[in-house]
Image: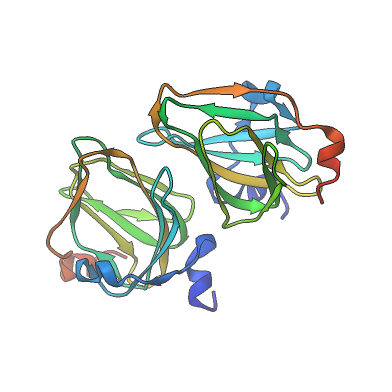
Length: 138
Length: 138
């Protein structure tokens, strides 16, 4: 792939994800697809970029679904092995589960993030993914 | 594209959509992506295939979102011009709006269909899209 737009997959690169940069290591981009009915955002990660451990809280419903669109990435839940992600993969992230997601160290990665509707939803951002642990993911 | 799997885009062809065939003209295929949190299905239409006019009813919330993945298709709301669809397009279908969607007559088409959660949701299937009207869509 020759440019960043292509690396973002079908749903576009959008803008540098400045609002959430404090919760990410490396550069990500955010493109809103729709905020009607279900909040859907395309998130594109440069190689090595990943978000911090975080939790989607909800009183009812809630959580997030990732639909992988381009490149290669990782998803990990606290206390579990990391899961390698490829285009066409779907990840259902339940509410209240501490997790992170992002690119592989040698690949761009793009996924759609779908906000599962719920009551009293909020996000809790936690510590960064340990560099040494991330470096072992091939 | 050389085969039906490729025509389905990233999220797979699945099986012939027999359960809904009575509400479609032509052959479609259905592949469930997930039914946790949000019901997400990949729908693939052969050239010329489209569903009947239909309405997503809901007491609260509801409706559907289409994320176009492959090929070329159409979406039309009752009383409006048809909208041509390409990969990367998103369509927010509000509840209570009569509409149809499907392939162009000369192209396969695949979209993800996302069920927007709601209360007391149901689908009402209506008449087929008129052949003469469909034939005019290029």
